Length: 195
Image 1 (cartoon, rainbow, N blue to C red):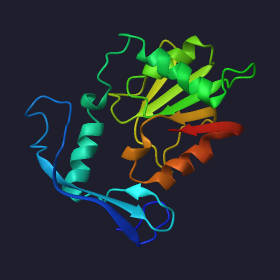
Image 2: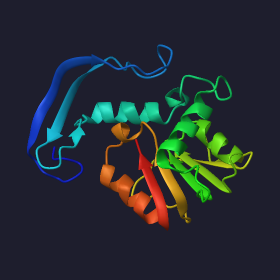
Image 3: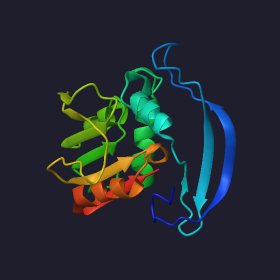
Image 4: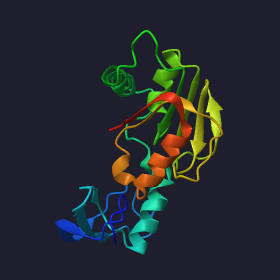
């Protein structure tokens, strides 16, 4: 498998673990025997991107997990202050709390909208999230949640002043497709933050 970012076939082997137990956050029996899988990490010699080549069974299993309710964060929405803390932290680090803050925001990998509720409370006029674990497209309290993956073919028919994603990039198989989506959906002066 070539690098998914630059298509270079040359890589350095970083990790070659013959068996790794896959944690699913689900009770036993929900997924067909998640069991163990090899864990191989490669680093592209050209662009230095680190990636894991996925076998077809592992790719299918991961897709099933991401599309389930078990991929949602472990802290229930509304419990504790994690969402408020992380949203404030993200906004501060992005310099968004300045007088001219963005009006529209899209979160890629929004889970159940934990951060987005905070953005709505801060006065953002358009708040949207996209994640494969969302049961169906819906709106609640002015936050729009869309079920799906972000690829260069995903279309939302709108642009955003801010697109951000936190702790998601390592789960994305086609990084270029995600970045193409972001480029297509950012306003001309929009900001992109991926951490």
